[in-house]
Image (cartoon, rainbow, N blue to C red; front, top):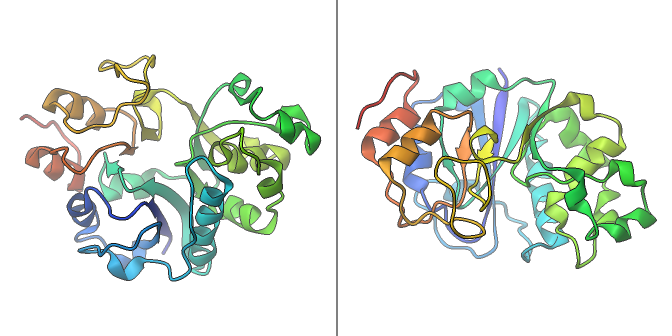
Length: 266
């Protein structure tokens, strides 16, 4: 039976740990594994046992974030049944049921929210010392890798050198560039880095989105029922930047954790 590896990259806690617990509740444990890399070790209510024992110090927009992701992959790849590796952060919430995610991932593909290549420059100009411009790409860090591409990241990590400098944001470039460098882009399912089409939702200012952010990046301390319903009905599997104090309506939680999707009325 195939498994999905959920790779949590967190600061200290999982903001909506109760919701994630509900997401996995009553799911066959042979269908998933969980791995957690933390910066600060604070106790978790449900997921304490999934923490790595070799976590490293990480910094924002730094190559250490990619190295932390690689530690998660190194642990997860040891389970031969893990076929997809999903990166989620401490502020992520599921927007679909486990069964929906499990049934809709194609083992032959990885999933990235990709942006226009023009956004790579000039900040990636130093990378041109190592590889041709055509390979340099930018995508959301919170991707879904299949097993083949996970093995590629672990066995061919030259990208750690390509992007190890201060003017870039390595976690947005390393994995996607490595896939293009190895001419495997036909094995990707990519979505534009826009709110309600992305695999993992995030609300950036200026996006084509029904509930646009009035800041550069919206951190949700509150979300209306209407907007949450809109997200539940979107293509997004997960959502980011949901603060701990953001209350998720109980009926929406039932919807997220149900095995079947239908109409929800609040």
